[in-house]
Length: 422
Image (cartoon, rainbow, N blue to C red; front, side, top):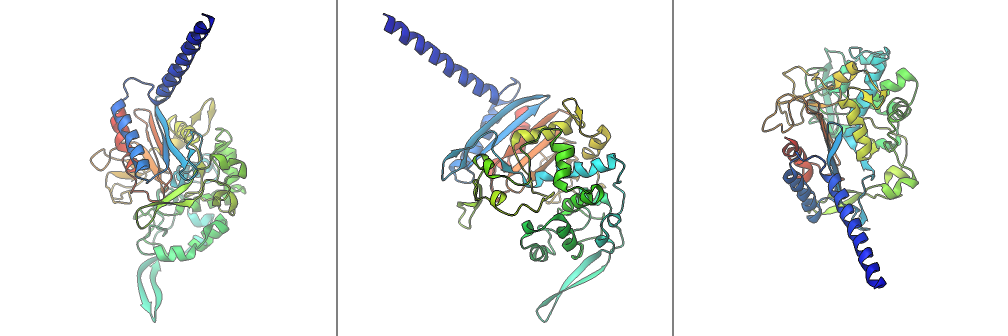
């Protein structure tokens, strides 16, 4: 009898534990009844399909609304060869999602009265005093000859944060090869070297007259170093990461971080997923040179750390009881800074503008699933986020594959999130 009673009690306890675990798991995934659970389930199905089709190893996402995470889950593995589970606190290479953080850093100097967005760049970096604009490329006896003319416009600090300085970069239609030849191994050098070499290349267009996604945020970071006398990394730690306890956001990792690091993948010419950088101590972010602190795409972070930054932006500079930035500073990051005739989009989408740090949705439409006046950006290793100030909503999705634009769950993240909370 006692044995039967013991079994009954043990079974009851186990049932309650499993029920609580199921309840807690579901509570993390859906916290508000008005969320469209079908949309969330469909998005998760898309993640699982990408994993099944061997396009990604796993992914983590969250949807935040008015102070509460209303949907969240972590699916798949950190590394497919070791079958290491992906964790909520795994490190991701967030790439260009670094740019909003770096943009705020420069704006903080304006807040301090040390610079102004309408200052000329050559006031701080004389190497950019006499820029020239590329007219055409000729070939003479097998040698490329660049035909240029002196720029009629100056480069201002505001051009750095809106990608209107004219600098060539990896996406440059005219100088992609020259840019690649200039920076064969950028990780070996610091921001000072980066800017000195960039100043030797001609501009792709007149400053302020067009939008071209490039490396101008790195130049902004170098301005921070010149003005403050601090390294860019130290400035971020002092003014942003430290006060916000973003302890998992950094440029490089230590050996102790290896267990939380994710493996970066890419699709080869056959469309098969292969490793690009391991998520262990052999990763270039752990074993490689720790010199270049790229403001354009160098940070590693976790989904919860990046949420801290996004919520601070959503709340106009406030994080807990701390003011990281003034509301008027954050307003510059939520307001379109481009004239209406310039599009802030790599595809030339007229519905997109650009703030000091973010892509800005001018109009919601077929090509713009995000709500009007929302701000967003992506990372080239398949990371993505958006902030909708009006509805107080934030969405973040992190995975790790170099072939952005080819991963369906990443490509359709915005669309699914819009269906989830509308």
